[in-house]
Image 1 (spheres, rainbow, N blue to C red):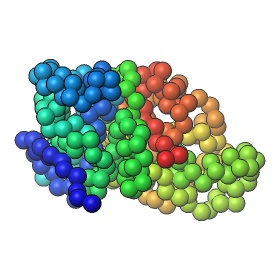
Image 2 (tube, helix red, strand yellow):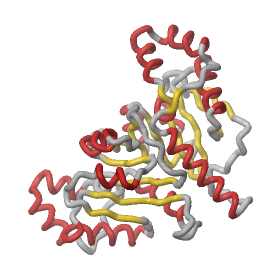
Image 3 (cartoon, rainbow, N blue to C red):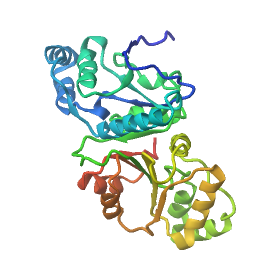
Length: 315
């Protein structure tokens, strides 16, 4: 099969070494609010959509759900370069878009007008953009399209589904919240719970307490983020990471902590909620992004303006 055609636009942002950088790929609908334009595409077709984007190519798009996250990533880069101007282990952000090059100019212009440091824009004209993730060494992929996210996960890339929502403006410090099971960790205990109930899951955890859990879909990204976090001390770090899990600390927390230790993954704060709602805690943390596999948790976070990303478990 012939390779899909794509157009890559390199900007004048300082190029980063993909072998050293932590590469994040976002789609246009994740970083910008394109819901009105997307509806135009669905109802009127591609031709009308392209015309609309060309007519409005100098009109900046509004911020989307992942926008503040990308801004915070840039803040981390600034702090890394302040401590070491030769630092190569930086964040590198690229945009992967199903737009054609003809309709993509508005995306490029919007990124520039918002001051976003996007190193590459890849316009693939309705092809599966996830086929290019590995070639760009992407460690995290954020998309508003569930099929894209599932394709990325099946390719072994950490990925999550972004929903357009109202977002509160968090602090400049990059704050990332991970759920545990089926996000950082595998869903092995979740599967036991569904089959044998809570008592069966507790019995399984006691039996497996000394055995590290399997890797979840976002483990690889968390490890890379943790390495970047270790470059700073506790007091002045521009990165803070959290584990917020429905697990109870008394009965199921020990294995989670031992697993993180085995992985060498230091988490700044861990909360074992014992099934309690996560919303009040998330409201206090004010993260730039919250990763969870439970749609009810995502919806609860969205209701209080927390930027949320679903990690699908049934792709």
